[in-house]
Image (cartoon, rainbow, N blue to C red):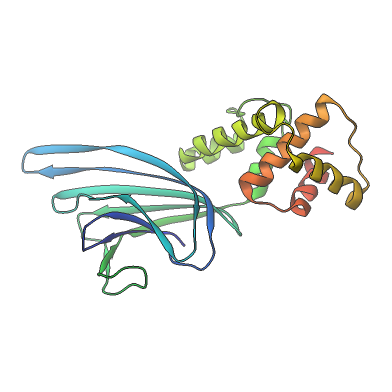
Length: 233
């Protein structure tokens, strides 16, 4: 369960992974505004990505995070865990709804914990279905109904899918076109399921999709093979 916190020593903004398990493919954004008398400050939304956030660790997102004015901030984080894809949303109005932790194993000072307002689990299968619905597509299928649903949940999914399709392209005819991962998955399908993919352009596209999905969602060969059997074969 990731958290946004503000340590009271330097008032930085941190993303904390208090659990023991690492999380991957972390996408986040935050933004808000402040009021000082009659002056309104609008903070431009900041969006960033972390490939990995180790268990029992944190990342400093901002050295100083405004808190002493009349501030309102919204935060979102999307990440891949062993359980699937998790989307969390947070909200802070001044310090009215933060909770104070006087001690924390990762910090030497007390911290403010930003209130979590929503948490949503997205099944990895939903991502797989979006891609495999048109396995030969070279771009994100922006008209796909499930994709549109996810985008309505959070626009972080836009970059998530953009990165996924760039990786598919890289495996198809980019830097990873000769990747051993494709050969290994082809071999796995044959030895474990008796499926022999012929040497063709179509097979290269399919393998590129499968391997890119495996890497993005951190799936095992067995998990991807099961999806292959259900949605591609």
